[in-house]
Image 1 (tube, rainbow, N blue to C red):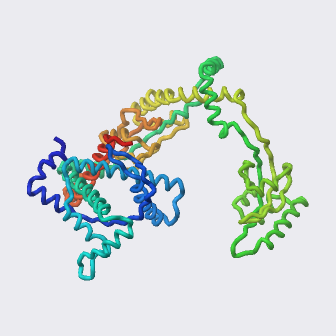
Image 2: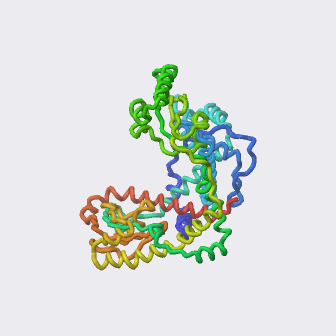
Length: 489
């Protein structure tokens, strides 16, 4: 019998009835007007429909709250994400309500009446319930009495189920001590992260291998070419530029005063003045320190004014003074590269090499990590820096930290931290550990664990928050299980 069934079986006792009846109710409800045009079901949960009107109402409330917190209007993408989040929450609520009803939990009329008293503004000056104020509340929110009371009932039903679920988990002193030691322990791990691409230069591919691979997998190679065409093989027109920039500021001077200065600078350049020297003297751009050099720019990404001013300029020539919203600028064209396309036949062997390399480098990395780095480190006790230098690798340390990976793919994985939790300080960890394709080899430099006296001094203040976390984790996991088992359309 599951924990909730056990709870239900005891609900006939006076004690359990008192507990259930005494669930604290705090229900503040603010709703927008429903969209009566949305009558389609947005989800069906174990046969029960969630209608578009419900989703629209909940979403509008959530949107207003989110935009108030953000201090701005959410983008279309953010609004779509928020709407789906609200839909998923409503599905979860429906699953919880169905489970509560399956277990025989009910909400009484007395409980609903108590919840009404929590509505702001429905009590008169004597603290009595004001029916007229209640009617105004319903009208303002576009609700009928039955619709509102059903929403209250469902909310209280979910609260009751959460309360009962929270009665399940307990926390013994040994369990609390174990969790506290895990939280307070600190480990310092010296480790090497080995990425397979480091071994790309070690992959040897013959012409025969390329030919055979291409013959058998041309469709795969061509698909890779098509996927990366815009990014790697379609090269737009590119220019190398230098710039002298005179800023326009709200406090002035106006463009009418700045433009003549730019034209004067341009005249000096036409007369043979050094662009780099004038840039250092006049330009209000970080590039001034480097003589105005901007490096390469892709022509389709230039502003219309810049592209037009460069026009048919030849390398070494100067543009006219260009006025933008924020500045007046003069450009010098240093180099122009015409657009170019790398054809499939030109790059197919390179693509084949990349594919074969990706297939072979993980095995090379694993062999290096296991047979060379780990073996050498374990035999010598110290990190083999010469071996690492040959591959451009280096060791680093975590510094004292809890033995927990917080989702960082570039830090030692949890399996490695678990090993550090048990290893003897100063010992090389016994395995090669892997996460997200990266291999890790390491040594436990030091571990500091809390003592029993510290636990005894802290346990009274630890019990409540630890039990709360355990209850929340239990409830969250249990609800996720209910949702996973539900039939949702």
